[in-house]
Length: 141
Image (cartoon, rainbow, N blue to C red):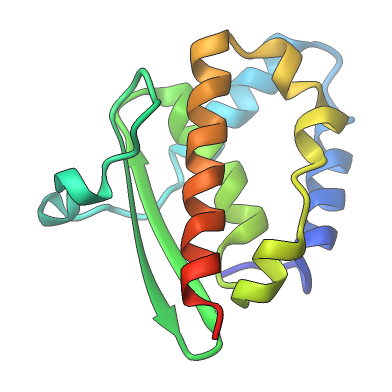
């Protein structure tokens, strides 16, 4: 469950946390540690329909509507990608579809993630983000 009241507040809190680190090696380690805390992802959810295309690693995203909000679960077989999933979940999970759709992922630029990820990791991150927006669009009622 998210602790910040809005997705925008979650982005701000994330940016503040990353300011504590002096270098990108520490930031990568923090991202990897975040990924280790993802909830379990049942094997039966690892279906072709849930697999994200455009990721070098294997990534699966499952979603469900929970009242007025969307809940996402996701997993990857790569440590850094699991961490990126955790970052996205922190910002977009358990939020109304309208809030998801209206929250620009400025943290990517603010943190410099786009510059510090390999092109394939960056493509995968954008593919995961696109899937979250796609689900929010389809679930907007």
